[in-house]
Length: 314
Image (cartoon, rainbow, N blue to C red; front, side, top):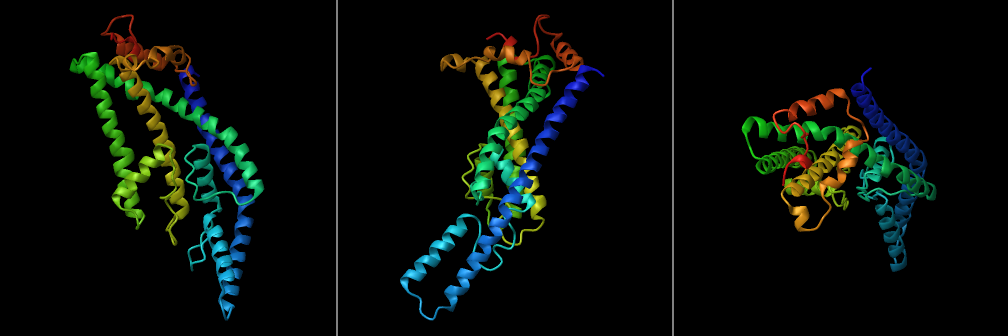
């Protein structure tokens, strides 16, 4: 088996292990938090019945009732009819929570109710956050040549663009595709599925999510009676992972373009040349096929050159 296939198998193993890590986390979170949530739902319903059975409501009982309701609402439990029909800690919701935890998005709409859940969240994120960064980095390194280096080399060879124009043209096309594929199109889908979201609300959600800001004012799949809620949650998870990977790819492409155009020197920032050793030793090593493609794409240029921003004269 060639090293190229081995590298792809290793990358697939990284991704599968990452998925397994999320599934295990979801199972643990659901097991810990679901009983606590059910007890809180029962307590809030009992409190509601006691409040309604009072013949005369005084200020103290009203304040106590409102305090309990607001506290339950903070954990995603509402006293309104049918609003708490779905659990925040079923398997799909727990999987969604685990994903937002390790990607550092953290909407905050769902938080652990028990001390055990809080302690497990610390341990889970302690391992999950760097592992997520590792998987994203490995995926981006495999995408850099077909998405960045290859197209730039093609623009220079077939269209005859100079290096500065080729990199700027490539980045503009890449940015346009990312905006359309990961902001505009998803916003259309979200605004259609979420009845209370406008297109601007959906664009705002996509931006806040993919920038890992995660304010939590808009969270998909939380309206009562959401159809195919579990499938919807999992789909948003896939969108989140792919979106973060593409955002990381865009940032790396922009860094290299800024280095070529002299912006890093102007602002006295680290150059992409400092990443050369890292690029030479990727997390998922490229096989002979990938090296042959890089050499073939560089043939019309200087024989000593490779398909990289760092080899273009500034």
